[in-house]
Image (cartoon, rainbow over all chains, first blue to last red; front, side):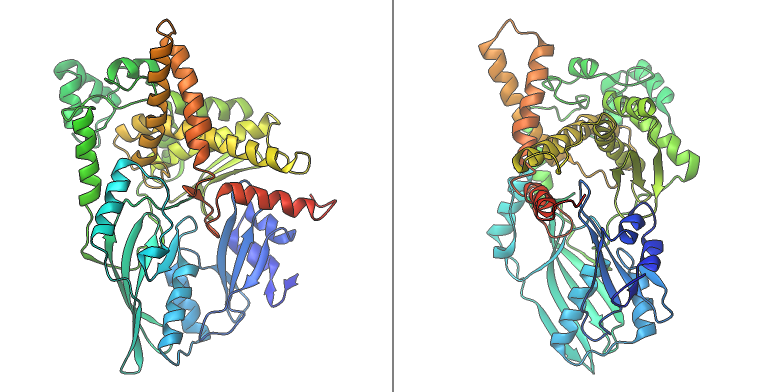
Length: 198
Length: 303
């Protein structure tokens, strides 16, 4: 049983029960995810919205047809890219590649949203502590501008992220072949009144 | 205090040194258990100044529970951000530490039985003979079709609180009261779906203080002090209004009405106002359930 170029049976086995049933009966949607620099059918989003909460995972398809979950598994991503290969041609490619990497490998219940300005934050009503943290942030806004630069043929990428209720700045060294050679982050503000994923 | 000291050792210390001494040794906000078995709401009401029975609350500690303590808490949350550079991306979610297999199951169930709310959750699981996977290796934790799946990455305390939440959904499902989008009108389906979620969240809030007070790993708890404070603010506002308007009303009746009001007005609002969003496209749950209904009703015959 296949959908486009992915085997639903292999996907069902990768995500396990009970959610594999939704994959097999067609309730779950399977959609290829474009990742700059790698083949179009290597990464798939699996999403089911029939239950009280939606669930979603990303899976990778290896050249031998095997499927593994990539959600919350950066090592699996690294293995996939090393096997299928990647080619990043410019800074824009590198930046989009990092964004895709963050989305695909985020924890299933973790909000990860790239932002370039505080105006993009979706505030919600907060506790007194959260409102105080928000006021502190707004009183001294950090620079959230993203940047991607070429360094000896490879790339250096920096971007700001909302990660659940915190704001952070992440830094990546990415080779032209898609290897995340280094990554680090610094928390800019925490305990903010931002949405909570459930 | 050693993390290896169990409830009996803690109680022995309480008898010898008193509750306040024990509370000072535990982290601020920790609950003090007076006897083996669950800590009941009424006991905690007596124990916690100003708690008023809203939650299974923490014992008073040196910082107190008044306005000064609130201000200190606000300042603490606003200023204690670690801004040093850390390796990795910080985006894959936290992973709890510790027990596996039967030891994990026992620890989670013991953590539940320490609180009134958790004891209720265990009674639901036993009543309906609900299968629980305490080490679910997939994504997330959830109830589905009469079974509960607790993710293996949750800490023992986080798992216990999650179990309290999912027990509510399992009870609704087993009772045949789960909202049916094929039969209900759109507004009713959204309202009933959110009502069950709101009750499940209130159960987590009620179990939070005692569970976290056990000093166990709360990784993945999903409910923290900030949401509890928002709930308590609504609860206390209703409680105080009732007390003023009805001096003869019993504490039990006041608490019951205040709980319902806080749930139906404050917690329910969280599913509409963007406090709680889906992990997929960050919609509110009012939008999510509305979309579910729309999907079914644009395809007649589809279950």
